[in-house]
Length: 339
Ligand code: ATP
Ligand code: LTN
Image 1 (cartoon, rainbow, N blue to C red):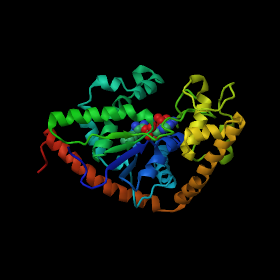
Image 2 (tube, rainbow, N blue to C red):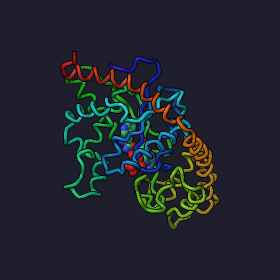
Image 3 (cartoon, protein in one colour):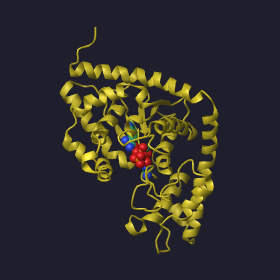
Image 4 (cartoon, protein in one colour):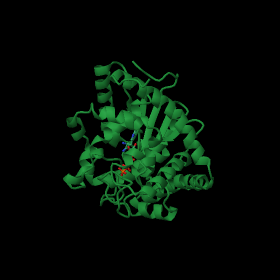
């Protein structure tokens, strides 16, 4: 089996700069990234090439890419420990993505639920081919680094399965080239639901006003959104998989993902309380997470040159690894090496 040459298992993950990051992104992905950064050899990228699978305004994309990188650091990533970089800064991502696209069966791609969901929102004729090929690019991101573990929310599990299957297919056809990665979901918070519609995943690109708490929301607005979250007409506060109780379950999940308390302790804590108390408790812990994060974020955005130097270093470190893997994949696939 091929793997990275260091002694710590390697981690890779990314978030699209397709909008403002939400507490779903934080609890499903970022919080785990921070927690594992000293245990593993971690690579975290801002996946701007993925963001363009739906139309983006150029100036906004540039701005969101910087903001996302700053948010990674504000959330607790230490650039001296984790490698932080921008996906498009390393051409190997696009190059390997093409090679993998050529190996990806259309049948597999059409089964991806993210493609089905996102394409359902557009007219068939105008759906960009990138939206369908999205998982091959994600596979390239992961396979270039021989990542062992990929920390993501559970909406990405199917893409991870796809990545493993595609890596296996490549290895089988052209010889051992890629490491097969495993998915890593957080124990709590792997799927945070919309506050206004707790049966749909909270998403940064959903327009409605009370859907998501953004990491940069004004604290009063964040609190207000949680106080307005959809619940139900029952009274009991407990975890539940019933559709009808999805709103309360979601609030409890947010509380659990932030506090790391056990389900039993949380249910006992709220046993004699009402929905208003639950919402206030969730709002308090969300606000106390956002407050220091926002302070660090604004500091970083005002520090001229710092972010660019982090991304430059990240590009150098990640680029060297990515290029070596790409070269090997190209040789194995039969490309003539330039003399
Ligand atoms: P978009 O709405 O633009 O498609 P998104 O908000 O779904 O974006 P992504 O950039 O696709 O966010 O996801 C980045 C990471 O955040 C992934 O690991 C994903 O699983 C995680 N994530 C996104 N939304 C949630 C959520 N609601 N709950 C838990 N994890 C989430
Ligand atoms: N598809 C992911 C974002 C993503 C990613 C990756 C996650 C792109 N490349 C590599 C983990 C590893 C999403 O969240 N939509």
